[in-house]
Image (cartoon, rainbow, N blue to C red; front, side):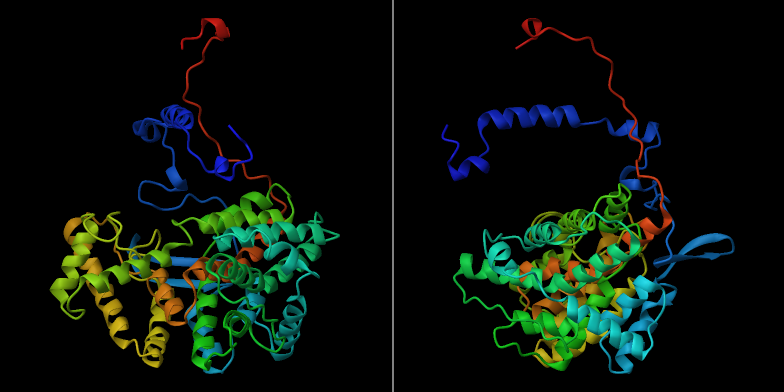
Length: 459
C-alpha cells in the first residue's frame, strides 16, 4: 500500500474491521456487574444524581427542595457566586449594559465590579484581544478544518508556543492566560470559520479586526458579518446567550474535565484544549444543532404548524424512531438535573420572542412554544418518567443563533466562547485548593491468564 495516499488516514480496511470487532468484544462488560459492584456509571447513582466529587464556590444548580424532610422537584434555579442568574440578567439588561464582561468578573473574582472596576476590566480584555503577529496567516488559514471546535483546540494548543511562561501554574500567571483566552476565543472561532468558508465553500474571505470599545457580543457580530452591521437587539440577545452558557456547576462534563486535567498540574493551554474536546461531543455542546435540524424537518413534515394534534403526532413519531434521525429523541427536551424547568430557557424565552418579532419569524417562535408545551405530555404517554421533563437551554439557543444568521458550524464554538469563563474559574479554584490529582477507581473484573508462547497460540 502506498502510505502517501491521502485516503490512507481515513480508510477502514477489512483487517481494521476484524480488529475492531475483537476490540469491541473485549470491551463489553456484563451490565449486571455494574449493579453487583455498585458502580456509579457516568458518576451518577441509580436516580441520576451526580456523585459528589468536589466542592465549589463558583455556581450552584438547584432543581429540588426539601419539603417535610423529603426532596421534591422544583423549578430550576441557577446561581453564579451566590447570585440568582435571573437577577443578574435583569440587573444588567434593565440598566442598559452588556453582561458578559461583568459576569466574567463576578465568576473569576467572587464580586460584582463597581463602574470603575468594570471599565478597567473591559479595557484589559480589549487589550488582550490581539493575536500574535502572523498567527491568522500561519496557523488559522493553513489546513483549515471543517470542524471549528477542532480549529479552536488546535489554535489554543499552538498559543502555548507563543507564551514564554506557558508552564507556570502560579495563580497570577494562570489568570493572565485565562483572561487572554477569554478575549481570544471569539477571534479564534470566527477566523477559523472564515478560513473554512473560503477554502472549502469558495466564499469571500473576511478578516475584520476587533474594535476595543465593543463588547464581546458586539465584536462577535462585527467580526463575523461581511458588513459588520447588527442591531442593538441582536447584540443584546447574543450577550444574554453568552451569560446563560458561561457556567453551569462543576459537574458538567467539560468543567469536570477542566478539574481533572488541572489536577495533574499541566499547562493552561492543554487543560482548555481538553475541555474543548469534551464540549465538542454531541451529548454535551452540540445539542442545539440537533434542535434546529429537528425543527427544519418538522416544518417540512407538518401541513399546519398550529394544529396541536398534527404536531403531537410528529413528536410521537420522533419517540418511535419514525421521524427525523430515527434516534427516538425529542431534542432540547429533558435535562440530567432539571425536571420542572431549566431557568436558562425560562430567562431566554422572552428575549427570543422579541427577536422573532424583529426577524419576522413569529410563526416559528409559536411552533417552538407549542412543542415546548406538548413534548412533556407526549413523552409522558410513552415513557416512564421518574422525574419531570421540560425543555432545556438548547431548545431556544439554536433558534436564536439561526435568527442571528450564525452558521451552524459556529453554534458549539459560541458555547465555548461563553464557557471558557467557567472553565477558567474552575481551573483557578482547583489550583488554589492545591488538591490531589483526580484519580477515580476502576475495579478489574478480568481473570488472570498464563502466558502462551506465540507458536502455541490459536489462529
